[in-house]
Image (cartoon, rainbow, N blue to C red; front, side, top):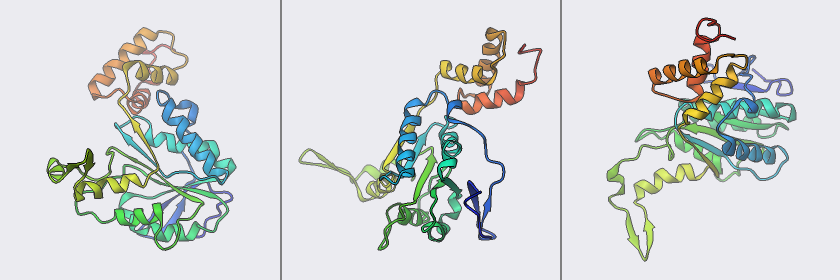
Length: 258
């Protein structure tokens, strides 16, 4: 299937059929909907705007606590800049072996593409990250200037880290020389020039997100108490939990009077 990228903002790779499927219904989340991550949001906006104007820009790794807005930020960037030619291709981790072929098909197009990989991480012995490396930094052929990789992960270095990996690390003339195993694991994340950490959100930020989802709530004390009870039950105070709380209580005029 040939995609009309003039009228298509996003697509997802389907390995079984070996095609890009256009996405008809894109998550409508906007940058203004994301609270508590202002620093990360501003850096991603700046990087994306540089990319769109043809200036040097970095591949980005958004890592950290679950449910803190990593994936939502990338989707919000697409919504903010798709009118300016930004396009997004989502590729699952298990399909990274197809990434060089996907990139070959878009490198000569006029649009600017974000290759988006959500929840990226690799287990010991998994060699699929090598396909990602070639796209991030190229091989004999330079990477295309109209493609960046934006990935999210719960792991800072994408590969599992164990205490035994550090046994061969040594200090020479005041400088740390990592073991070969550690160097290999760090080298992958190092290929992302922009690495942003996302930390667990505070109760104040969680409640601010809840309030933004319930703008007409008249009893904030009840709203806060119910939302905190929900967060305690789910052991998480995150933007994802706030959205799940909204899904559960948005039409409850008994608990939350709007």
